[in-house]
Image: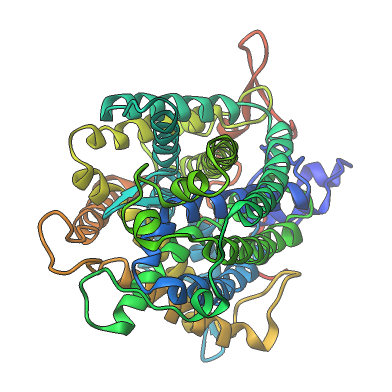
Length: 553
């Protein structure tokens, strides 16, 4: 790397800043997150309590305990493979943009027959599509970590529904759709306020979230086990089969039962989006991904096994719970109303932490994408406040979530179709950089400190297989016979989104989108912060620099 003038003049640059500059970006954000803080954000995005609790009853009807218990193990193993593939790339390119930036950088040093040929012409469009699908996946994840009957509900909507079930439990009043939406609106506004704080405070907030999830899960497990009058046998928990889907194929039903686990095991790329705020990002980011998946597996498996042992009556608690949510019914029937209220509050807290962490990660994605000129209002969306936080990007996401939630007022089916694009969008954003790595950059890819070595390609192949399988699964109908009410509409909004994305690029984006560091030092817009008097200044200072962007470390 050819050092900048400011480096020659004696300014001190730590390793993270030097790596970031080599990749083509200034150090604009506040790099104050520890590795544990980044793990906290990622683990909060996975949130086993937020993901598993709304889906538990549905999954038990699609394969029973066999699909729930062993499905969680299988999904966790395959998710770890995908996480390892992403972690290796994250270590090489630790930037807030994450996957769309990786797609460009992986192919920059591509070699064919010993000749360095660089990126194919289609790569900017692929990077653009990855960026939009990754962002859509993140803010849809903020919306989409639960499912109620055949409809996919949001983390925040699930939280509103849990609050509604709590109100019903206490007063027998059933909140209307409008009331639930109003609660949802209040929740996303609170997420906007929390994420407008300095990232250092958000790091502390997400560390608290880790302990809330771990200790909260332990509390739920202990209370339910101690207070359940009878217990299921080990044979029931580990071998019982149940099929209330209408489908006759046992394999297909089992695969449907994996939906619960795969919905929960999403959003772990959040660690990558915190890279420019993480100390020692080339190690902290990758290990944030891996540790979050492993810890989520342990906590989630413990939770699922314990809850399944404590089922008292499958029909009244799982198939047709009086309060609408299976686990709420189990809490009420076992520990009783007082404990049920406390345990539901624990889950509500986990859902709030989860939604907040997803807001944090998606705002960083918006900031990075706007920095590269890919979004409307990009000039404004990558501005930072006095704490070096992308507050405009935060509220841009909150506004999007508001408009996304509006269809729920009129039709859960329409809302479900819109937010169901999340899982497939996330899968596409994971798939493309991994495919580029294993197919087009086998020899030219230069790993960072976290490297899979000779296992990189085999792990990438397994990751690709799993992403393709689960993407197809999320397009399949979950009930038979298939009707207009229960058909899976996920493909419709997904095709529409991809079509609009490509059209937007063809008409406008190709003229402005400059990923991969080509915008380096073009201007200082991304560095401008606003002080207490509203006066713009440049964070970090320093003269403009010219770097030779070499792929080699």
